[in-house]
Length: 218
Image (cartoon, rainbow, N blue to C red):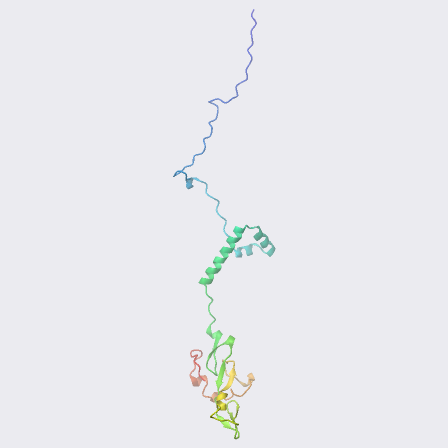
């Protein structure tokens, strides 16, 4: 009896077959509207840029100088430049569109009751009050103004060579302006102001209306 020959058992074929092998993924095709250009609508949108920080927001965010310095040192040059340019733009736009209103005239300026000029209270100089009295003779060579007591010396006076003493000293007073009349409590030197009511140069005599008439009237 013939001996049966046992065929060796071959291992199962584990190689890929046409049916079982997965189809190789085709490279993604770019939807183009023109050769060499990518359709922007089909591409992924870029990450939105973070807003530029302002100096005011940084001060509110960081309560002390150390934290603020640490944050600024961590920024890149581009980020620091963006903050600086943004703040500079705000400053230039605000300075061009916003003007500081001048101080009201009622606070900055006043009317002088003696020389009747408008003067700046911060730079109060230049008041000149001409003599409002008459010249009274004291002796042969000496006279004086009754308004302020200024003595006039006529010794060796020659009208052909010299100006008259009263022309060389034309003012009772030179100094700061005043927006009200002087009284005894002010303790002002001189007597030129004591007879001012009879000088015919008061604001009532000159028709002054506050600051409406800045013309010089002495």
